[in-house]
Image (cartoon, rainbow, N blue to C red; front, side):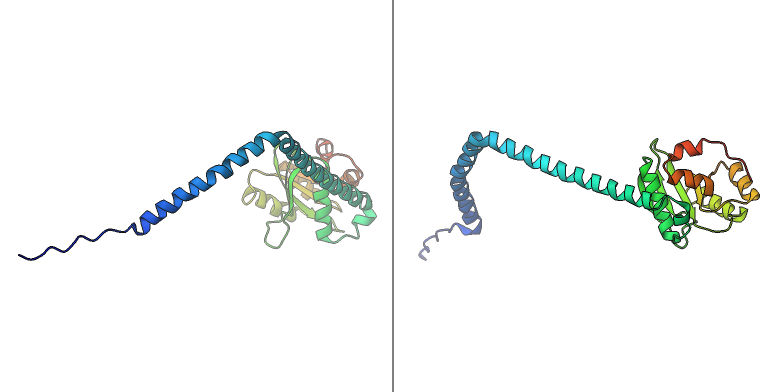
Length: 214
């Protein structure tokens, strides 16, 4: 009869080694975890104080940033509150002036978006009561005519549907432009109203005042 070969002893293999090392790691971690728990139990008042202090520091930095931004805005508005200064502005700077006036009056999410192909909209904002606004800014020397009003109304009817339209100019509107805008309930700010707005009269107050076509 053929002699049987002795059975080979099976090694632990990779899986067994991983289990062994994991168990060893857990055993080694128990004292560390216990020490950490004891440290927290002994030091939690100081940890709480440190956490609160860090929170106060972050809050203080945020408040300082808000105040700094507000001071910068107030300085910018004071420096550009007169019509003769506005008349020297570029169109882009005029858009930023209108955006800062909106922020001053409590509008949120104010963004200057003016660019070619924008449908005539230069600034987007949300009023304090949650109504979205689409604003067109025209730093012109001549009056805004009815065709430009119709173009803006077209953008409001399509790309910016659901937005309240606000058309701001540093000059004025022709009588047909006034009639076109008022027939569509478009909010219109001409040179005279712009002067009041820049000097501090809130926009909502200006918008509820009746305006007659010239």
